[in-house]
Figure (cartoon, rainbow, N blue to C red):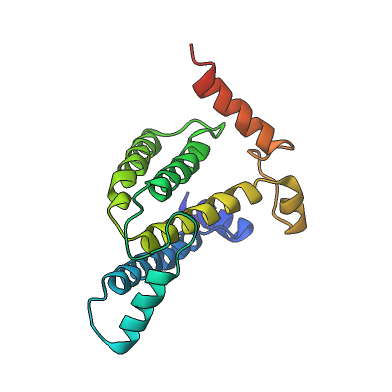
Length: 183
C-alpha cells in the first residue's frame, strides 16, 4: 500500500507536504504582520520610526475608519470580517463530497470562530482588522477564481471529478438547498 501511495504522489505530483508548506509560511506571516500592526497602533517602543508609522496610521484611514489605530466604533469592519470568513467556511461545507467526522468538527469550530471574531475584532485597532478583512477577501477571491473552468483551463489545472462546468450556479443551488429551502 505504501508503494502504491508513493507512486500516486509521484504520478500526480501531489505530495501532502506541498499543501502544508504554504500554511507553514502563510500562518506565521499572518501572525507576525498582525503583531506588527498591533505594535505600531499602540506605539509600544517609542522609537522615532515607530512614532512616524503610528502617526501615519492615525491619519491613514478612509471612509468610516479615519484612524487605523482606534477600534471601528461602527462594527462594520468586524462584521465584514466575520461574514467573509463564514462565507469561506460555508463554501467548503457546501462541497458535494460528504464531509468526514473530523471535517465536520473542524467546520463547526471554524463557524463558531468566525462569529466569535466579530466582537473580538471590534476591540482591536482598525488597521489590524482591515488587514484581516483584506486577507480573508483575497482568500475568498482565490477560492472563487480557481473554481472557474476558464481559469482552470488557462492555468492548465487538471480536471477532477469534483469540477463543474457551472461552479457558481452549483454553489448557489447548494446554498439555497441547504439554508433557504430547509424543511
